[in-house]
Image (tube, rainbow, N blue to C red; front, side):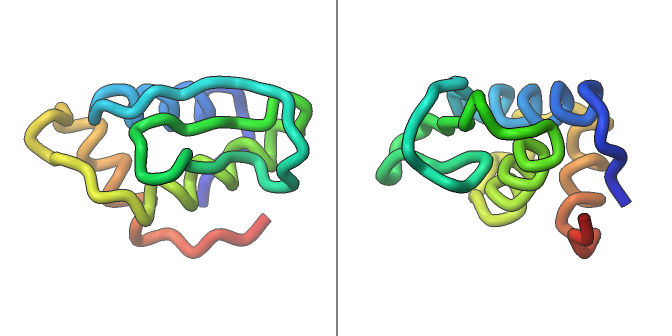
Length: 90
């Protein structure tokens, strides 16, 4: 179970950045907390979404994206494994 804190959001951002994705906070007319731009390595997070929505959006992306595990340190690899094993219930 993920906690809804700024620290969790920062861990998710760092996980994505370490594997080569750019995380940007922008305003837009998309409803979800985060989205991937057309197979690029840019993740756009709706800056007006709440903390829970941002974490949920980034978590769903992190679970589905193919990431090079060799770029991650042990803690990040364990965090990604935890994300993939956790059922999201907010």
